[in-house]
View 1: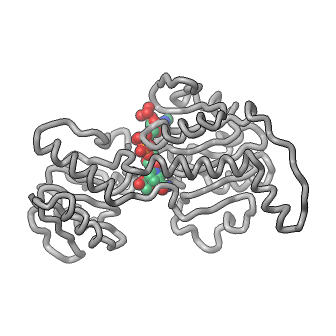
View 2: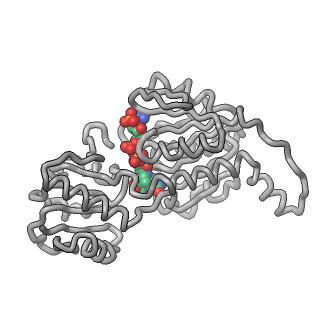
Length: 309
Ligand code: NAP
Ligand code: GLV
């Protein structure tokens, strides 16, 4: 069996080594722009080059080295008509829970304000926020949204969730569909965006939707930047309606130097690191899925091209 490995950032050798260790019976090969691709059984990709996709017509399935599929689905009809399979958690869920817990606690325990105070040598204990008024609203209740929900419940926050299809989750107020969105936003103090970027979610969080949040609300975006209308968020932060945002993802990455977010102290920026792909976990998961496919068994995390996730 031959497995093609490709990453747009060129860092493919560690993946070749990991596949050799986990699937010694398979031959893992890399491809470079301009080369003619040898016939392969499977492809494992991240940010593929268009010239590579043209040559992938004979693979049995394409695996992704991450959870998000927007960068692959943008190729539309030019994608080979084979199953597309993304990572399902593979060590990313706990990282999302860590990242969101850090951001939520920073706001809830007012560490953001104490950081400001300390810069000015101020010693001023602030009252605690009532926890029952600090509702965490998680948009996207999938493989990565659920560990966030569980972590927030563990801390005792009121938690609500929003998804495309209805859900019944113990201890979580569940909303779904566009018809449930305004009610979901209305009672939310900290909005956590864990949605995939699709035609339905692009620019979803604009001034109208963000404006439905409680005054003094916070936004944590850990999924994709293009879900948020960035100028609208900036305006709502300047007006004080949104008290602060923790953003790991942006419409253009790296976030360009002149972007106004860089100079807004109420916005915390990280460079798309909220959940990094863990190579060992990822390769083990892909190896198990290849094994299942070879044995004619069903695999999870198949991408639905119509839904876009
Ligand atoms: P997932 O398991 O596919 O879950 C997606 C969730 O979003 C599901 O609950 C789904 O609803 C919901 N959803 C999708 N479209 C919706 C819509 N139109 N309206 C309402 N809800 C909708 O995905 P995941 O593995 O949790 O990953 C989520 C995203 O995280 C990825 O797509 C990726 O963009 C991002 N991500 C970011 C990083 C980072 O480091 N920043 C790392 C990994 C992933 P249903 O349950 O009803 O289907
Ligand atoms: C990272 O952003 C991923 O989608 O895995």
